[in-house]
Length: 92
Image (cartoon, rainbow, N blue to C red):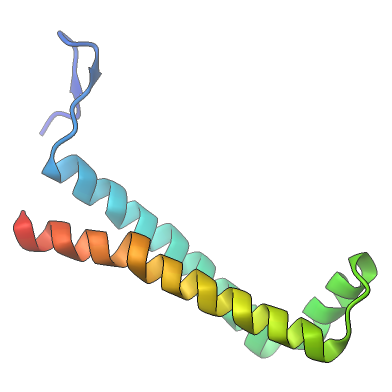
């Protein structure tokens, strides 16, 4: 399986290349989601202290912002990483 065609001097885009790309997207973004969620669950006070140094925000608003951003990131992860990867695995 060649990803680079030397005679045409550009990358060849095929199902295998796209599947590999989305697999790496799923792994990297999935790891970020797990780390971020773990930090919010196990170290909420540390994260709040860090952010309150930079921004004037109450604890309740900080929890709401973190929950909202985690929810948005999870939806984006599923829609733009996981679903395309699964679809490519089905058709390949």
